[in-house]
Length: 61
Picture 1 (spheres, rainbow, N blue to C red):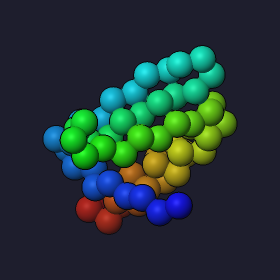
Picture 2 (cartoon, one colour; picture 1 turned 90 degrees about the horizontal axis):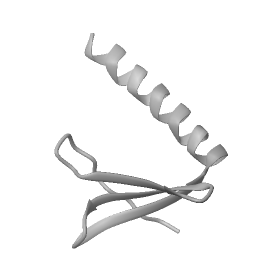
Picture 3 (cartoon, rainbow, N blue to C red; picture 1 turned 30 degrees about the horizontal axis):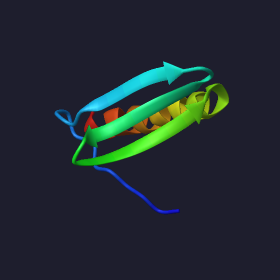
Picture 4 (cartoon, helix red, strand yellow; picture 1 turned 90 degrees about the vertical axis):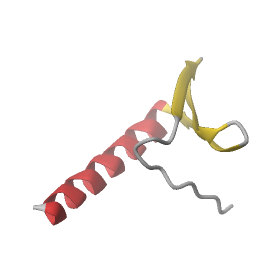
């Protein structure tokens, strides 16, 4: 599967936890990307996001 979304500062990002999963909706209802993650999947996404953020911040310095 291939899907993408550009997330900028004003892009809506909503999340709710249902049972043991986090459900994200990125974008608005007319054009959105949905992601569902388990706890371990969310931990992997958070870790990768932090590494990317650290790299971007180093590049800006």
